[in-house]
Length: 339
Image (cartoon, rainbow, N blue to C red):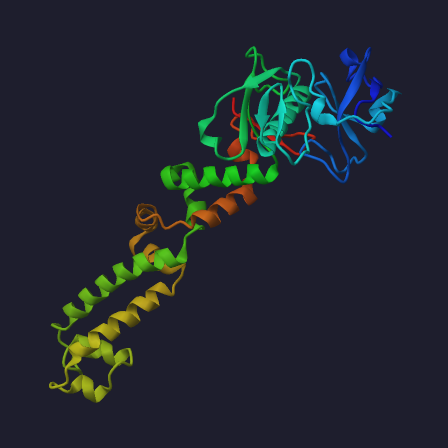
């Protein structure tokens, strides 16, 4: 079994490691199925080793042990290469110094996944990259990369935003959709937007509108005459079952005390037509005016809409500004072209 300090030589069965296959390497770090970091593929299994000065990591079948270190050393903590760079993969739970620089484990791990993803993207797309800047995603666990020379990769892209895993990408997409919905809702299909109405928010807005309408209506018809009752208001109160016929014909009956009840009943009926009252407004005032109420009052359920947008169009539609297609990397990271 391979140990830290062992000397290995790389197999070069598929030509992938040609430039590193003609020499030996010293093992500096080992990851196992029981103890591993971000670069380890659990679906592959076996050991994953890093070597001094070697920029890639290797699984068991990719190398031969040339010589084994018999004396037990202090482990990979002393195995930094001569350039002062620590091994590619780390799993230690203590602080340590590499070339005189102290690094906390979490910081090292964060750098590890980004370093691994960068190399994977370069290998996958056949392009050398450098770190770029994409302020929008800085707080969303992502790294911006761009072609070193400006040359396009084999998929036609030259700039990318890379996330640690699909979960991080999903959250970034939702974040972007929420921002766009709040600041530029015109980017989305209006019919789709209207299917994402927040019923509770809509009801509060439309209830206020309908209460005002209905109170004005009740006040106006109080001054209109009726053939059977004291006035039109009394007639409608009878029709709605809010007063008896006798009360409606009684000149002394104070029907104004029933206005609030009539307004509440009318408004609730309008709200019950659907979408928090939107459907009644659309049917009586018109679709365009109803849409304006929704947009002016921000009545879209932003979280629900973000989830639905991803379900319908996929994450890449919102994160990949080049061709709407992501690049899945072996470590679990995922990249999206931005240019």
